[in-house]
Amino acid sequence: MKIIDFESGLYRVPLTENWGSSTYAFSSLEFVIVWLKTDTGHTGTGWTFSTGNGGSAFKNLIDHYLVPKVLGEDPLENERLWQRMWLESHDIGSAGVTTHAIAAVDIALWDLIGQALNQPLYRLLGGYRRSVKGYGSGVNLHLGIEDLLAQIEGFLSLGYRTIKMKIGKEDVYEDLQRLMAVRELVGPRVNIAVDANKKWHSGEICRRMDILNQANIYWLEEPIISDDISGHQSVRQKCVVPVAVGESIYTKHQFAHWIKMDACDYIQPDVHRVGGITEFVKIARLAESHNIPVIPHFGMELIAHLGCALPNIEMFEGLKGAGLSEMGIISEPCLVVNGAISPSDRPGHGITFDRRIIQRYVMDDIRLRNQQITTRTDV
Picture 1 (cartoon, helix red, strand yellow):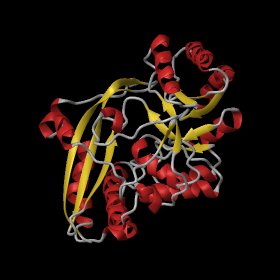
Picture 2 (picture 1 turned 135 degrees about the vertical axis):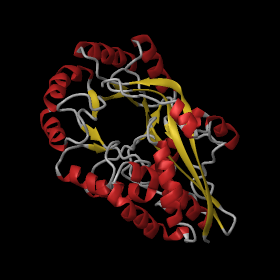
Picture 3 (picture 1 turned 60 degrees about the vertical axis):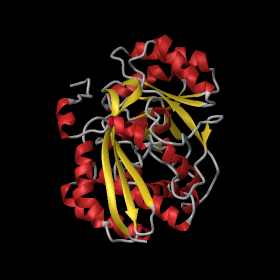
């Protein structure tokens, strides 16, 4: 099997409901999708995403620099191809735009490997379980309490026993009021995690958590800016609530440093942000060697495979508003049943984008210039 051609596209897809946190607001996501074609008639599908900025950079890097490195190559040599893409892109940045772009190609390579071997991805990667449980996640700081509770009720109806909500109001007692309303709704046996979206410095978040933990918080996510490892160390030492980080960490080397510094209790790698499946598996294995659970960020349709392959993946994130299934852009949705999902048994990852639907959202240079998006609300 040799890769002989490719196709790619940039799409801006509206969320099914708007997002609001302590630092940002979104109404859409950008997806860059890559289709790698082989001389055996197989097509491997890969994709990456941005939160409104950067998709065109990903696509240009993919089209002009990354895909040319895999054309004519055997996808079964994916480790060598990943290293080639990453090392030859390293001088423009070891992570960020580079790893987002590499992820789309890497996911497509793994899809081709599964097709070539006639095996679903979760079995290729280990086949540890047949389903993985999840948690309901809302980007919901902008919602009033009534709408917030309605969203949480929706999570409970799907069978989730852990839910996550945003914190970050200027008045800590407003956050507490929201948390206690949710706690009253869900009762004592449902876990409530919170996400501060890098809002504060370490001293401020510890002061706030002393107040907010009246709601018995399961984990505290991204309390301060992700570049500040020593600050997370301090939070972890001073707060009784476990600390979760990872969606803004991009390489196995960075994750290794965080783990070595005892700066987190859970890691939350994003398969698209770390460079795809090849790197994600290494990060998960690294965490496993330190007995650290993995709770991946976003992408539940692909995490269905990774979560069923790797034993220390504790939960997927059922992120309200932005699942491929919920957005209606894939042909076969991944359904949550009793709070869990199962991967497709089709060869590869089995995820097929509906070309007719995604064509509605295609972006070009003119549309990008005319539809500039500002997502930050704190600057």
